[in-house]
Length: 141
Image (tube, rainbow, N blue to C red):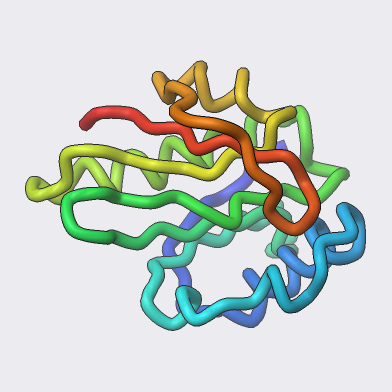
């Protein structure tokens, strides 16, 4: 199946996906999922060929660090390469910002290998985010 990944202003669709995946499926508290960064981040939305939203991610900057976050794909689209397409899209955008030197992501522990395939490395100790074990991962630009 062919998916499209586009920059979007439809933040409501992105949040709806995050609620479905993080809050409903993974039991992350709603208060941990919604934050003020949605107002400043650049959002990406993946749609299936019928136009249905199936994945999302957001990026934002803090100084010379680009951050990728809130990456999720609905269960029916997992294993299709959509997650890779979302991360590739985010990386391309961040690489177009010459002042950025590093990219950072807070990865769920089960996804560490996935992010390592993009050149990310684990730094520091693990932590809980929304009750789920995570590690910070970084990659130079």
